[in-house]
Length: 227
Image 1: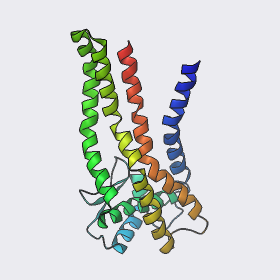
Image 2: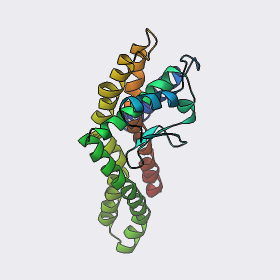
Image 3: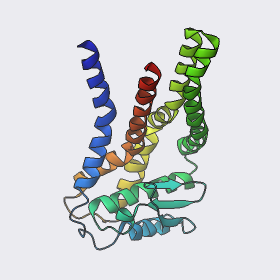
Image 4: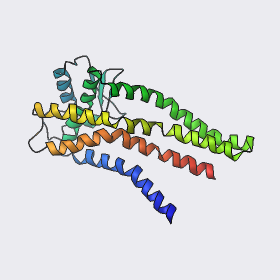
């Protein structure tokens, strides 16, 4: 019973943020024509206002983000072409990251470097997990297997740790950059500000929620290794 309760709590902690983020973004994606311009158009306007004419605005299928290496704000088709409150607010959030980059915002530089390190670390973690049963069998030492298992778990959880550490940077992009631009430029329809704040919170938590979902892979590995 104790383990059932514990697993339920863990599932809520892992799945809860992801569900909340998706719910908020989907809720304010309607009506689809609430604003006269698209998210992509607003991103371009805000970038030009910030003297970032060299930063591109592109469509992507890999999630809304700002790429500090390519100097590009990338929006999914529903945000790039959309005219909903979600579309324009998320666009402003990503422009907020571009402005952080322009200003040499140290946490953004740190996150960029950490993310570059996380990808190979996660691949290493998967390799370690796959090797764990072999190491255990060859060495006939359960302790060696446990050490490899722990190492794999730690490396697979690297992305989650990075995004939790850099969550304040995401909140900074939302509330110190994006929201002031939306307010000062009077881009929001009257009454939409409080809803935009909820979207900006969700945008800040997007990476954290995605990386928490990735932790379910650890659970799958654990189940496989216990067979």
